[in-house]
Length: 458
Ligand SMILES: [Zn+2]
Ligand SMILES: [Zn+2]
Image 1 (cartoon, rainbow, N blue to C red):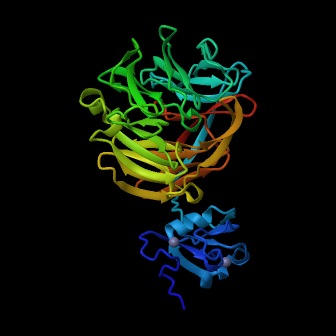
Image 2: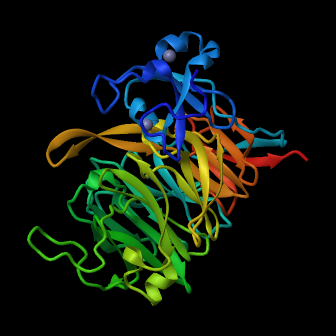
Image 3: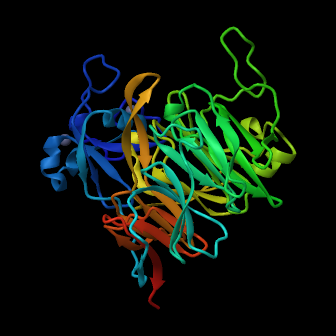
């Protein structure tokens, strides 16, 4: 009889293992890979353990254990490339009665005839104000305390086309708004105070459809600064006040036949997140295979000591890598801890959950199962051809607790100290969280707005 814990595939020295039923382990004679097979993922309810099982075992998942075999992790990944028919059970999720509840309050406004696509909180943070992007391609300042709407600008006035997804990012003091084609090459910075375009952003032509346009503000010594992609493998820092470039350095790309430049970086920069104290940036990008790699480096060092910090600086750490998965949900927990969605190392086997990394050491501190996010596809015109581009849905935000939600729900609240779920609401999917007023903004089906707050019944 085969011992349950010994590796039955050809890779008996493997450090990482998983499990599959023996019916999925038949290879064609002389074949290196498994044939593409229908299978199911059976969570045992013990931590995040699962077994890949064949459809026949799937008819009686509780009786299949005699057929379970231990194989190496890459064999598990290989089998998972076949068609997944579904999941049985769930990873183990810790829950705790916390007395938390959501309290909603309607915002009374004259009727508005648009849908909000995105909302970003605006400073000063003592007022519940947002800048919202509408489906009528306008940027509107929305004050929920003294309910009012005020047109800031339109996408066409910014000189951008409105035929593709758009991302909005706001400086900490609320003065500057970066508006970018999320999967395109163009963007602008709008100055809300001077009512003018402060900068034009361009990031080149090399596969932008697979990366969110990197453009995010941070505040260092009372200056509002912008990190923005200027090529697929290059980020720069500019001062949006006067458009000056603060990370002047030699080219980071080269053409066939040219000499590879020093500090060359083989990495597609994607969505960025800045630590609360503006000391660190985390980047959700990828490299060819493709494999997503979350990295982080120190902004003060980049700006003051080493212009190559984003390429190969001392503070730069790789936090985790996942085959075929990048630009998923990510947020900061404190000034040195970043939360990254997804447990595991392969897109087909990612388990809903969150991993916490210390950016100074690069070490994973804790992880827990539960928070949900899901992939989606977007139809897009790419270099003149209609294509679908993969795109990760879901948001993580942190303010004492970790909040997780996606456009069709659920919304959930987590304690990152022990990974316990404190609250789950299936039909709540806010547009944005405002850290100043601790409120979530939603737009209801009839167009009205709602503010929601988490209350604690002690
Ligand atoms: Zn089986
Ligand atoms: Zn193997």
